[in-house]
Amino acid sequence: MIKFTGIIAEYNPFHNGHKHQIEHLRSLGTGVIAVAMSGDFVQRGAPAWTDKYTRTQMALSQGADLVFELPTVYTLSSAEHFAFGGISLLNALHMDSVCFGCETPSLPLLDSAAELLQKEPDDYRQTLQQHLKSGASYPAAREAALRQSMPELPPDFLSGANNILALEYLKALRSTHSTMTPVPILRTDSGYHSTELSGGTFSSASAIRFSYKDTDSLNDISHALPEEIMTLLKKRSGHLGMDTTDFDALLYYALRRAVQKGTLTHYGDIHEELANRIVKSLADYQTADTFILSLKRKNITYSRICRCLFQLLLEIPAEFVKGTSHPVPYLRLLGMRRQSSGYLRRITELPILTKMADAWDILSDSPYPYAKDFLSIDLFAADLYRQTLLQKNGTVIPDEYHAGIVIVD
Image (tube, rainbow, N blue to C red; front, side, top):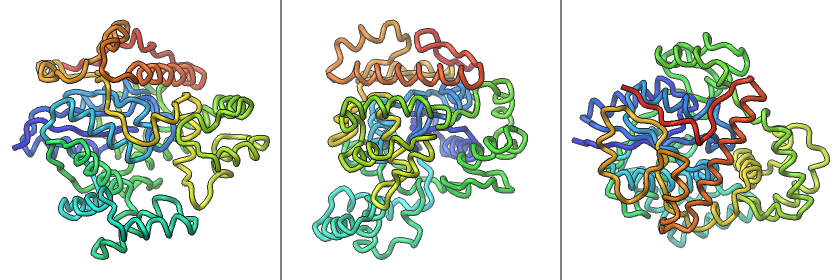
């Protein structure tokens, strides 16, 4: 029996597939479910569809016990660093298992592939380099090298975004020497990248967001969401629909400023080739989306460019997203079920931040020299998101010093 289970999620938004995962864990006997959740920006390189406090309320209303914010440095990063951050956070919570959805929930197969990717034997590395030199993107080159080393893999093994994340979770479990047991569960919707609502109960978060953007109506997505979530979203309709287009002007400003100062490569995952392309193309900037599409090439994905632009906007230093991953330096509690508050006493390795006014003094004693830098980035991200939501919908949400913890009885 598993007593304490962690989930790494974005809930962008929370849908029936997420509810199914929590119900599955309860059926296995899980007593406490803790979530490491993205904050104001998400891993695909975009603002969250709705604010993190609304998403925390969603999770708690559907059975999660504790929700912690995964720092922005991890959420606006590659799948590898995103997974490392989530596993690092759950390790600090003393979870005994971690549950994740995937398209191929065969733990032996996933674990074998993760071990190969982590060890990178010579034949794998040689094939990877060959494909990279031919101009393939890193994900495409990695898939080709993995398939050559493991021909028994199903044809669509690496075409699913959740399988890719599952491999990164397993790699992070190994690299952190975690004692958590992995619990893969079959993803129930039509796929992470699917933009079409299904006719049944389960649709992807992408499909839900696309439908809302097209119709500006919650009614069309009601069948894909738990009833309580629909009720909450109707009450908070002014909190919904945040999108990259809402940051068009801010992203242009960040790009123009960095080009003028010659500092593009100082931030995030922006390498020299991409920086040169940005410099040459910036005069043609109209919207963030069209600009990102103009920068996309065979060897760099759309999502990676999206992340790079938001890393630049939030001034995330390059050293925080390149090279060795940094362990999570603090635990920012967003919300909890009142009955689960006693579990917090088990957590001793990292400080739990509940009041932002006290956070800076608490982190003064941190053994992690980057702790305050990470928190500063989180606060900057929250402030930009809050102000942009105000400009878009006229909705005012409290700043990080006044928001408080979401508590559900």
